[in-house]
Image (cartoon, rainbow, N blue to C red; front, top):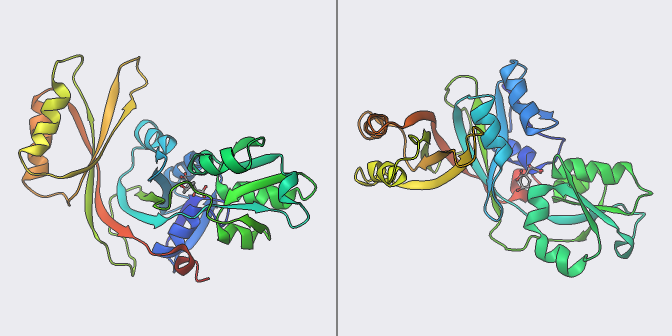
Length: 289
Ligand SMILES: O=C(O)C(=O)C[C@]1(C(=O)O)C=C[C@@H](O)C=C1
């Protein structure tokens, strides 16, 4: 049985993703995304599961940055789950009295339309996760506060769902990565829908057409890219690195060929992982409710 660290507390979306992919393993909640990756570094857990991208709000930058700058461990898997956000209140409170809404910044961003139209005057406060927000509301029954979180959190923290499905667009999904200290094969009963390889590329300083050359190296080899994201290198304005997801498993020819070609052009290239990709079903099925 593996120890799986995840962004906690119990009943975050990350927890739901872990229940879906590793139902037999021991899930250990961690307070924050960096704390989760630190626990991996300290050998307190075998695998870390953290959110990386939401379909409405984009990348979870703290995950990308911490992975690249602080804990450069391989990605050994990814999973995507559907996301349903609800507004949760304590049963002793009334919706019309709510003054403050707590949640993870990504969850708040996914519900901006609803917040703007229905709860215009409320204060919005970021928490470390949606379940941390639900726990806060549960622990403070006298405060006029609500949380944006999922149905599992409503059940876990005994809150009432005051508004269901408040995310702005129905196609709401979040992708989570599984990180290990060393590359390994995941043991799960789920069937993967394919493989991905993630590479990190930093360009040589200030050279015209460098990004075009990088993309050409993938393109003429017919390597399909599912994501390209730039993040600051934190060495000065205008210095960026790129995280590129290739839609296939690492092979002996094409991906090593891209790496060699980019290095010859003066880029730094690091392969962050080549791993199976899982698409998990409905939240209700994953939490057996
Ligand atoms: O707070 C949670 O429940 C999380 O698992 C984090 C997180 C995120 O970082 O994007 C995961 C899924 C949702 O998109 C909202 C929040």
